[in-house]
Length: 461
Ligand SMILES: Cc1cc2nc3c(=O)[nH]c(=O)nc-3n(C[C@H](O)[C@H](O)[C@H](O)COP(=O)(O)OP(=O)(O)OC[C@H]3O[C@@H](n4cnc5c(N)ncnc54)[C@H](O)[C@@H]3O)c2cc1C
Image (cartoon, rainbow, N blue to C red):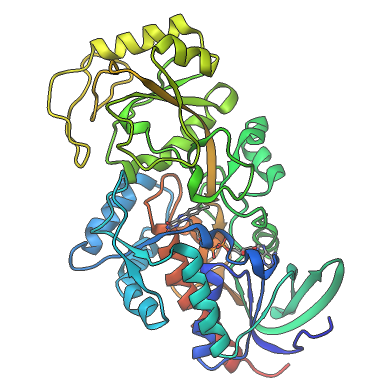
């Protein structure tokens, strides 16, 4: 390929947070680094450009507490040692990030109360990525856009290089080490359909259309261990009017815990007040994916209106529940009965959305365990919501050195992974807000350093 270096030391595939952190760490460890990104510079940054914060352990948020929070949401099926390791390593992130130019801002007020646990980037993920890309340029890292890595070539147990595609032209790039940081498989409809059947056609992909899992499947072909639940993903409730890709953060619907949620049959199906919203918001995408037609409706009244972070679309509004049912094309008698039944089971108590207020229903199935107030103060509001897939959890197995390992735990020589592509080691079912960037930053740094070392020490061909 014209212009691409022949014989680079470290090649990073993917230019999101994990990839750019790996590139910076590799360059700082003395390696010649080439970063290849499948999309153009104007949309660079993958899903990372949509982010706002990173979760880290600290004095105020001990590692044990963070691990307990993670285990509570993600359940079994993860590598607990690696999860603990990730959390321990996260302590250093704010300092490392600040050293590379990242600036912070006060946490957003609203339904995600994350001030103690998460750091918010000044200007959000785009500013974060731009800062890192400037740092990368200063370090002499070469970045090539519109180049998709399509194959990984190993010969006699040695990494040779990768095949790439730039606008239909195929070329081979030789490299000493590879960092795979090309995200999950969430934008690959065919793969999603294999796991979720036709329901996948209704999924909204919140991030980039480029994370198609090609390198993930190539690594599996090379014998990489599979980690994480193949059906596992971070998925939230997004407005049903969202674009199919790249809606970003603005389409999220945060009203769930302040009202009730019904399916297309007008029936409630889950406890809307199960836990503090940041710990539970990511269960709703999957819950909606399991409902008929993969659609649901968040319904609330004027007491809740304005008390959550608004989505970019206005909610449906009516003076009556019957009017709301008409707007949503639900059976109005069924919706009326659902709201009445819920209202009759709400117990007295003091509402406080900043904590588990135990303002609950009594004798209702499913229950609402917190923030349960009758829905009886017009006007009434509703959002139609769909599963909004953020990223998938199926990944390649890695060790603490971010080396990709096979089923026996042996490293695939010269191949490292960071970010969503290895998130399945530490995420299997649920998700903890801000942990995606923790994973990418922790393992990006480790992968970059490890790849630089590997490339430097490897014997000549
Ligand atoms: C709307 C939204 C909001 C989010 N908010 C947060 C948040 O506030 N905090 C948080 O922790 N997490 C958040 N996340 C999750 C977070 O974005 C991810 O966990 C994280 O960005 C993953 O980083 P990554 O580098 O692995 O992937 P990405 O940032 O997606 O980068 C992968 C890159 O690889 C490129 N690529 C793909 N295939 C190839 C290939 N074959 N060759 C070359 N390049 C390729 C893609 O174009 C992309 O640029 C959010 C996600 C979304 C969608």
